[in-house]
Structure formats: structure tokens, C-alpha cells
Amino acid sequence: MPVPIRRLFVALTLCCALLATATACGNSGTDAAQDTAAVVAAADTPSPTSSAERQKFAKTRFVANAGLAAGATYQWIVKPWKAGKFKKGTKGRKFALVKAGLAGAFAYNRLKAAIRNAQGDPTLSKALAPLSSGIDALKDLPSKLRKGDSADDAAGSFDDIINKVKDAGKSAGAEVTNQVPSAGQLAGGS
Image 1 (tube, rainbow, N blue to C red):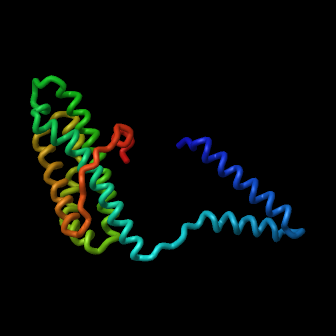
Image 2 (image 1 turned 90 degrees about the vertical axis):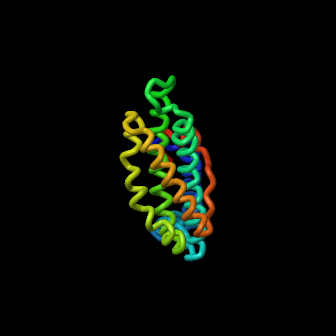
Image 3 (image 1 turned 180 degrees about the horizontal axis):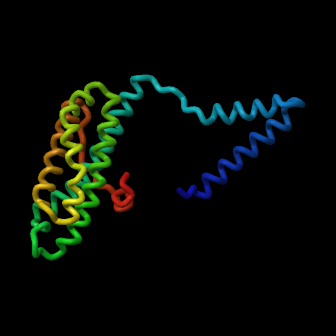
């Protein structure tokens, strides 16, 4: 995984500044090295969050992930399905099926992330518990969409699960709206 040059430059500058500060102001001996190591270790440790903050962020993350899954499903699976693009002999069928397969894999990934996020909030967790098996059943549908095997059934399943997730979120106070992901997000899977 390549690291951007700006990030490397900032990290290098920070390390040099810490090293220069520790040696210029430090004691003679190993105390300066231990202090520098302590500063670096303290900078790497995340600050703890309260349970209220975790719950707040859990709902926010759930809404974002479920919204991306809903947007991808609607844009590249449901709309072409309703327009009849998945039927044999239709112009652009293969391209529509490939896009639907990618969108299905993306939606499955984001729905699994939304379920993980929902576990941080008790009301969301209870509302989504019955849907876990339905979301797990979506795992094989993207490959069926790409191949064109029972594309109508697969599109209907995605639409049904997305609507159930939206309803469960709404009942738990986390309303989900469709957010169409960019092509980069769709290709990257997150």
C-alpha cells in the first residue's frame, strides 16, 4: 500500500523535530532517549472515548455505510433491473450485469460494515439482529449478477434487504438515505 509523499514528509519532519528537541534540551545519558520514546509512544495511542461517543459514532457510521450500500444498490442494480437491462437480448446487458455485480459486492461489503457499526448501539443492534442472516445470504448474489444467472431474483433480493435495513435504521432513530458511491469507491470496495 503506497503512502503519500506528504504523509512521509510530515512524519519525517516530526521525528526530526522530536529528536532535535530531545538532544538539545535533554540530559546527558539515556533519559533523553527514553523521553523521546515515551513521547512517540504517547502520540501513537488513541484517546479513549466514552460509551456515549461510541454510540453516537456507531449510528453515524451505520448511516454512512448503509447509505452507500443503498445508493449503490439503487443506482446499479434496482434501476437497471426495473428498466429491463438484465433481460437476454437487451443492448448493454453485459455491461449492466458487470456493474451490478460490482455494486452488489460493494453493497455486501458496506452492509457487513454497517452491521459491525450497529453493534456499538443497543437499539440499532436489536433492530438489525433479524437481518444478519439475510445480509449473509447476499454473499453469492454479486457473482450471479455478473454471470446473469437469475439476475431478476438477485436484484429483488438486494432491493428487499436494503429496504429492511432502512426500515430497521429508521425504527432505531438512524434514518438511512441513498448515497451513490463514486466509481473509485465502487471499484475499491469501501
